Image (cartoon, rainbow, N blue to C red; front, side):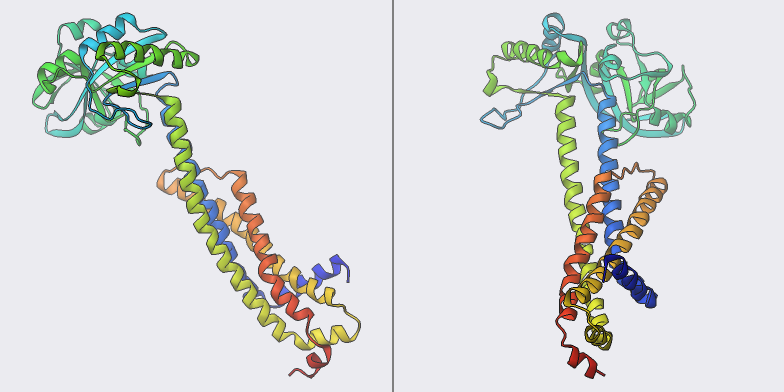
Length: 399
């Protein structure tokens, strides 16, 4: 029996029991679809998160108080002061913008509407360092920082909560009971990690006098002159802060992070989670394989006389074995193709319904389809071998 004849015979056998064939393929369909949907969500989450981080600027450098620990380094608490910022501003190299930050939580109130948000005190370089754009109005001016002016630039989510999305510039809002004039509204960055749209920016001098009451900085943002100069800028910042704090590399009481580090960490973490959850979804394909083997064993028992007749007229063991093996592989392949369609449709509908970004990479389609084919061969081999080994005399006597 040639391959085309074996394929035709196997397909006719499957079509003779349509309902049973569909139910047998169900495990493979669900398994392949589950793998694609899980990977699509994971890859979409990774892509969305990486895009949000990149939107903060590829040149961004962040300086935090406190040692980072690890590899024998210090874990002691530290602090960043205005003196640190002033020294960095006058001495640091390879930097195009430098913004000190004091941060606290607070309530913003406009008329009878109240919204809990993050209050950020900083200077006029903040938008440059973090790659923010102004949608309406303007940002803080250096003169307002010196004068401790009570002016505020609000994120889009704050504007939605207090102003119903309207650009009501010149209106006064109360932040923890202190009145501030709204002079600008930030361009939307998108919610999620850190939610950059849910914050209010005010002059740092005003924040320290009116809201925070602490001389220490929460962090310092810096923007390197170019992406290639990020390592040199980081080394320049480290050198200056070590001299000011009288610490060595192993006893640093500050931490420096840049976007490349966040991008690498997020990419690796989400990739590992996706692979882990996708591996769990592949288990359902194994369950589908068990179902295929079970049905093929039933098929062998039902077609015992047929096997005996075929052997009596000259069919070889390899002919019998190839027919049943092809049937099991067809079940897996057809189920895999249907599963791919269901997975693509399901991931798209899930993304549209929940507002998530979903990405189905080609490797996930190839892996799930290939695994389905391997399942068909693996779990179909035993029934096929059992059919091939049947004695033709005993088969003809079988009732």
